Length: 171
Image 1 (cartoon, rainbow, N blue to C red):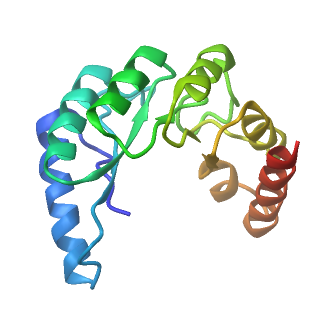
Image 2 (image 1 turned 180 degrees about the horizontal axis):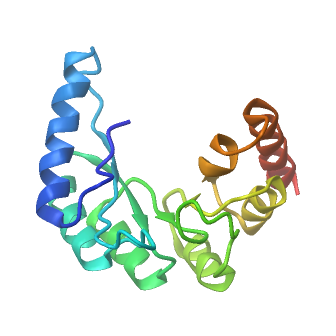
Image 3 (image 1 turned 45 degrees about the vertical axis):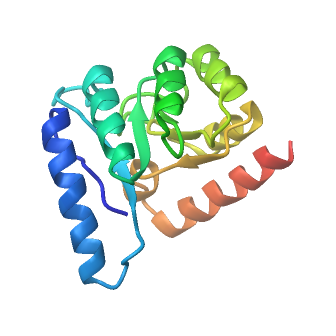
């Protein structure tokens, strides 16, 4: 999945998205138009820029990309991104790598309740119970990296996260 991580503004993200699509073609993924859109000028807290993200999303959707934007848990921004044609919404649970869980569940619940496209909680999930809670809230999925990558037993943590997602979905 091409990703614009490391981009600080819309122009950089658009350029990297285009490059990502071309690289995907080189490895036989001619129809892969997916792009994980991350516009993060904040190098300390890794918080996404909502204005630059919206600008990049508008342009990329017009160019035929299936845009998966990483955003703050802002229901108004989420609505705008859905209106411009994003394929999913990916609000952060808490800052990237923080493992703080879902810190703004009220706003994320509003996003989930109003979205007509999938909602993936992206960032901040630190333990399996938080993944289950995200699914219980109605999220379509969670994206977990640091909790697994930094675990003493990564494969065991990945299995625990998978079980928690299943349990949360069933609940």
